[in-house]
Image 1 (cartoon, rainbow, N blue to C red):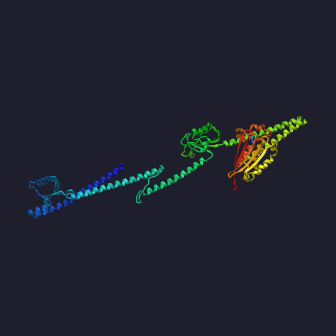
Image 2 (cartoon, helix red, strand yellow):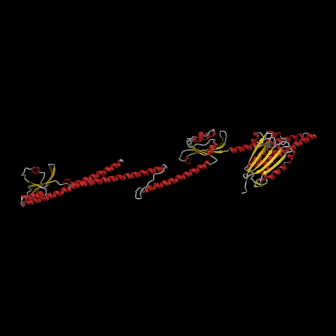
Length: 570
Ligand code: ADP
């Protein structure tokens, strides 16, 4: 119990006691005042009786009736009472002005009343009566009253204590619930009756807890959708506090920095950022926490995959950072693919110009030799002109393939149509009749598994088959064989072009789809290719969402397999 509370209880107790005592003393005073009146009246009676010379017997009876002793003055007897009365009168302790006196003798209190003559002021007698009072006259009543009174007071105290206890318990519960609500915990259930003074407060707390739950849920949902948004961004995002600890990071940043995942449980950014240039940008921002700064640089990250990124490091200060604490936002945009494409374009231009320059140089060389006089030698001039024609033809082929590839690069839209693959294959064989005949090749068209037509782009398919069959002719042996097998299943269409040619090494198999790549043997082939045919095939197959693979064995032959998904007319 608190000190103040104790004091309050003490004051209430003292008040109860004062009231009890006051009642006692006031009661006593009232009884004694009455006694005085009565004694005075008895004094009058006595005087009257004395004057009337009442008989001694009557006087005795009168004394017994009113429990009063009479001591005549001046004193004649030697009784103790007479001595007391004598003393009192002698010392003038009572007189006509103040005729009452309380004395004690034989452990009893008495009231003395002086009867004196009103005219001569002569003391006549002293009336002695035991002093009346609550305790002496109403002992039983007073004990009963006291018991009841203190019982009532005790009951009052008990009830107050119980009340205090229940108020304290309820207040404790409510304040516990307030704490639980602020600490986002579940509050204890409170059940107050409608007439309880805490009922409205309990209800308000319940409402408050429900509002908090709803707000918490809404905040959680917001955070969840925000996190999922950040996590699904292709842009790497990482937020650092002013000490460089990671507060938040998405999956993209982990992928770009080549780490499994970034643990945002207060790890420092240096655990993840290993590239000096990027660390420097971040350090720069952290070192000047009051300066708003936006740094941007293209950086190549260290590591196995050596990614190229555009790094943005932004100092968030003031309101932007929340809680007025500085933060650093790191955003990494992966440029690797763009850079790779750029490099591929550069390589392509370099390769293309190299490839184009070779026939042009040959043509120019031979033409100059002819002009320098070789034209007069009919045998030589014929040979030179033939070479010039061959090179011009090769140049034409090169330009054709480069154009085809550049068009393919632009992702020409697919022109969906029903395509009869068998017809396309037959057409290709027909077109390539001359070189086929020249090598005395046997061409088979296997359509046993083919149930076409299919839905695809005819021009693209023509180009694919033409390039594959051209290679099968070009890299075949004399009197070799070519098999074109078409097949359709419920899920795919396959085109297989098998030859009995020189075959490919395992390394060549992995590189032949690169632009301008040619295996060693190709350089010795009678008919020179461009090195772009399979690159075009790969590109077109990719556009049709298919796949192209090769199986080959040196000196035995190669099989190119194109697999296309089955498309349905929408
Ligand atoms: P090219 O015009 O040189 O034939 P391609 O892109 O069509 O260019 O082919 C790339 C290289 O792959 C060729 O130079 C050749 O070395 C190899 N190649 C392609 N098809 C075959 C095949 N059927 N058999 C053996 N080698 C092949």
